[in-house]
Image (cartoon, rainbow, N blue to C red; front, side, top):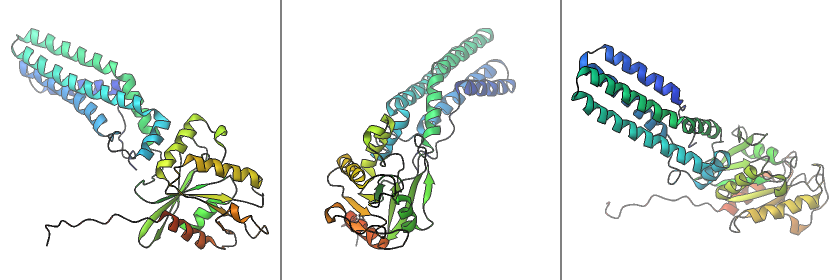
Length: 329
């Protein structure tokens, strides 16, 4: 997952202590002007290098982050504020490099006492710059901690998003078609784990995603963050599988479930198929033909494979084949 490998973000005070401690050690190894310059360059390098590493460890939200993860991240941390903090940290890294070089020139042309004063002035200005970005580093660290917990969903693979009220059999279906390969991950803003499963057809890997807390109740029951997370799913889904329980044993009448299905349809682009499957068909006699695309019983293992094939056909995924250079022979 794109945010999984982000390193721990250092705090401003930690970096200053680290930089000045290393500078002191570097100074003890030399004497005179050479000691002052070594201290200055060591402190400047430690600060600028660490700050730059903080920034470059993040993907470029404008180019490297898929729209699915962009919207999901924005729902959690406010991407605009995060990008501003990253920009300020990088500016500070460059500013510290400039201070390092400027004061290095000054102390070389000064007597030892003045050179020492210049080095101390540079340290004070570097410390002030680090104080100015204390909140930015905290924001970046908090964002890193939140985004690392996002589930590993691959936007480049065909995806089935499962929707429907709780207890209609969504998780059972995901378990049945993915066997033991499914994973449980958590969104920071949901109380239940997001279930991500995988299966293969014709050497193509499909992912199937059950998102409890997002597509299992009407929009007016979701908060702003959950609504934005739902909008992120629009960028992920190649097909939506809406699961009904016509028996009503799930605790929601059939007409209420159908109303949610119609709402789900409006959330996705019209080009994304929304297929309806009635689960527990061994528990009821009939379902109106216009209400469903298929029926199944996960507990009885009836028509489960047929439903999966229906979904795969609806996606009609065609992998991009590498093009051969016409110049090759």
